[in-house]
Every structure is written in structure tokens, then in C-alpha cells.
Length: 256
Image 1 (cartoon, rainbow, N blue to C red):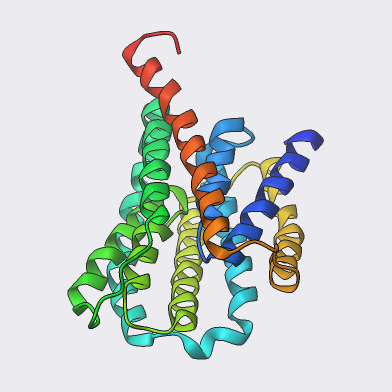
Image 2 (cartoon, rainbow, N blue to C red):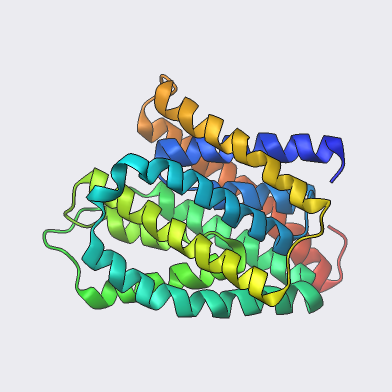
């Protein structure tokens, strides 16, 4: 990355970490959407760096909150998430090498659907969902995490419907994201698919992510949480459309 591209990526990662800390989601979606729109990095390289940054953000959040994790539900989610993460990673590598436009279209679709889902206020359930539901949503999270390091939306929606405290929900989700990031980084290293040295400068965003996370907790914006969610929804929806529309035109052989 050039100096200008690096600065752009640092700003993008900072904004994503700030939003993630305030809302509990969207770090991977914002970062991957921004990368897809700007072309700062290839999507596989960006997904690797997002995994590392997600781990940093999650570790910082869990230093004090790990005791609130719902370990039973966490276990079911991870049991399904880890195998599907391998499937998602394989799909990413295959599509990036042979179907770049289709990969961008899938990312745009994932961002649009996720933004629409996250815009809805989850209706709380009277009693907790069955264990199988955590396996199901964990598998979707693993697939999305393997492809784009964006394991959140379906799992976030499912957890926020459960009759649990918000603290327990947030810390459980963050723990899932952290462990998924660890496995994904390990898979990249084992496969020998590390980004080029010039692109690894994106890891310089780690201090920016730490600073943005601290700032969001120390000085949250003077707006209601619902307003913040709407802002994130609009940004995600527009980025998804901007990613998907040109890819559709190109696949159809028509000018965008």
C-alpha cells in the first residue's frame, strides 16, 4: 500500500472499531465494504488483516468482560462455526482466483442483507431458543467468517432475541468473533496465503483500532443508540449496493 492508501485504511479501520464498540457489530462489514469499494487491498488480504484487527478489538473488550460469557451457548456456536469457517475460506480462495466479480457481488449481497437484518429491532423471546438453533446460526457465522471475516449479523440477531442480559450477549458474541479470528489467522498461516509484505503494513491499524475502541468507550457520541444503529445501517446498505451493482453489470456484460 502507498502512504495515501495506508492512511485511508487506518481511517477506515478506526471508524469500524468505533462503530463496533458502540453497537456490538459491524467491524468486519464496514472494513470489508470500504475495502471492496476503494480497492485498497484484495479481498483475501483484507479479510486476513480484518481478522487480526478483530482479534485486537475483541481482546481489548474482553479484558474485563470474559466472566460474563454464556459458555454453554458459546460452545454450541463454535462447534458448528469452526468447520464452516474452513468451507468459507476455501470458497473465498476459489472465487478470488476465478470469479472476482461474483465474489464482489456476494460481498455486496451479504452486506445488504446484513444491514437490513441489523436495522430490525430483534423481538425478545419468552424463553431461550433450543441448542440446535445455536448450531445453525453458528454454522452461518463460520461460513461468513471464513469468506469475509464478517461472522456477526445472523448470530447477532439470534443472540439479541434471547432472554439474556445485554452484557452477557455482547461478551459472548465478542468471544465468538475473537476465537473465529484466531482460527482464521491460523488457517491463512498454515495455507501459506499471507498477504504481501507491502499489504501487511495494514497491521499498523492496530494502534488506531485500540485508540478508537478506547475513545468510543470513554467518549461515546451524544446520540441515542438507535440513531447510531440507523447511521451504521445506511452506510452498510449504500456500500453493499455500490459493491453489488457494478458487479452485476459486469457479469451481464453491460456498462455500469
